[in-house]
Length: 379
Image 1 (cartoon, helix red, strand yellow):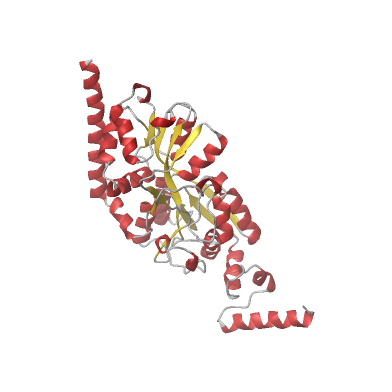
Image 2: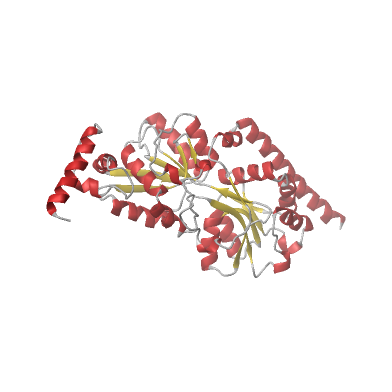
């Protein structure tokens, strides 16, 4: 292309930006506009770059996000990503505390606790942003342009292949209930799962199970009878099974399970054949963000084909249909049941609903433990 044509084109772009009402960014910012985006996006690139910083509070391990963060900083030099990985409760509680004090405001919250994120959005803490990537997402992954599902992660079971023979491996939720009801002595004290009292993700998964299958209370009874071990995170459950301390683990995020299985061939992963829940990490930009333009750039990068591909390399499947699923998921035939990003999740956050659920959960776990003790006394 002749230099005269290049100058003419740049002049046209600047003219377009001038007509749109924004200040004309220089050619460096125009060059960073992603392919397919309107050239006016250069204004956002300029504003985000001038902010220079992006503070992210997230429940996703830093090591999982490292490649994506590095790619973002290369795409937008001048913006430094300050990433903090926290528990879901800490993300919410620290954010609400910062809202009151006005200090250390995060620019973007990313959490696997879908219901907690939706509660924050519903309470008016999120700002709206019409992402250019919106049209590439399924309807269930966006609520009010304020809550964005950025992954489509299956909820799976894990087991130790050395300790559990193939014929005893549960293939669906009812199989797992039956396994619990057998009360095999080799499983006593060696079944791991989330503690819904301390894990928001664990509670959400169980509440979804209850709505779909109705087997939750049988499971709770069986957990008590088998002296199940309860943990706050997927990583803890998976590590317990991978090490051989537990034989089987219930309801863990598939991204962590598949990553560990790639390192440890003795760890098996089960996609329940009756239904496999699909959870999503939800991103939101708080109304109090100190660097909102940088946050918008990051959200768009997260939702872009490039960002989604980088996440999928860590076994976090994309919400987009044009990004291939991770290799480990391509042969999965289990029916996937996505948890919709939206107000339905508020039910799980209702205090009376949660209290009622936890009372029944504790009652069933205790009853299971008591029934186990009665059997031992009888013998």
